[in-house]
Image (cartoon, rainbow, N blue to C red; front, top):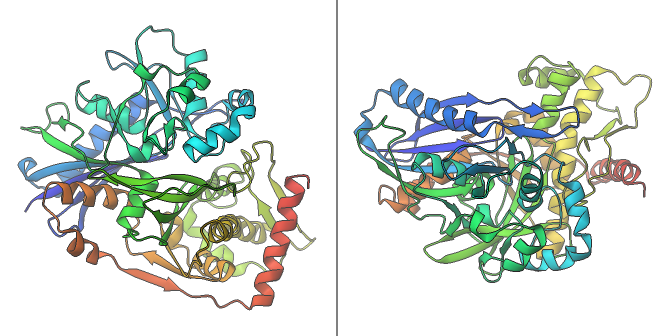
Length: 483
């Protein structure tokens, strides 16, 4: 039996997943890393810890499965996007990685606001500290003292370490989220780099998503080096893994934050809707594009309930609490803990609990928190339909929160669309693994995607109730935005 090793380096942890010759998951190992949050609310990761965790996860999944190391055929990598790392020519980290959630580069984005329209036209991305470019500028101005240094997203850092410095590369999906890639030339844009003060020589080479990115033996763990044959940002990995290969197909990944993506085919759209336009992937020289909305706080709302509010001890309690909540309670949470992202892009927005009554209690606040995930995603879906002139009849979803039946039914009701929950939570890893397996000839593309199965939720809420609930949400958001 031959295997693909897929690595999913996400916001909370690094996972190593084994896929067999049929494309089925036969093993998984996870290593969590520290979320470094200071008194200013800056969010950082220790990139050296993440790399060491990758090594641990790979060894753990191979040892637990009992397979021969020689049976590993190739590696695929999916990674948290927009998070930026810096390192010196010897591969030593410079400071900590700046995480996608972090707002520390807000002042840098503010400096460039007169250039916002030009930046968006070139990159498809609204000017925001959410994206990598302003984070890179912050690192250059505050952390980097070396004359020679490398800047990259987490895929570039891992590739550099895994190949002992031989591969300084990224793929088009990750590059398209930096705010430095010109969507029309598909190259790093010199003018944009100049605006942000980022030297071109510090950036990685951009490659097709199914390229050979180099070879690794995981620091001697394997007897022979194997190829790294796919790299994708995690949301793009999930889009590919969900089989959304046709124009008009939509998926949502429910993670710490959420990425809502629509495949828009071989040409980028120009949009002023608050949505981003990015590369879906570039495979064998052919680029496909996506419309995307990004939300900071979806699964992270559950983490907030658990770690900060102490309303639950673990996410498994949610279903029971939701059953006891008063269905008529009108409380709404707008979780703008670090501002509101798509489609509003207001970094100054503050979180709000709205519509509470004297009878609102713990269960009702939990209900409002869970429902806030669906409200935010519905906002993006509505704007996406208008921008693309496409009715969304089906939403394919993945990620841990999709196991919450209440949330999935509420999402279907609110968005008035069929929600299809993938049988596997590991769609980012599956996407990168399938792409690597197809690249080395282990998988047939048409056959391997037949492994996917779904549980469907269909709308049950009346149009009147749907309208009332969504109107209340919009009122709460208007208060947050001071409108």
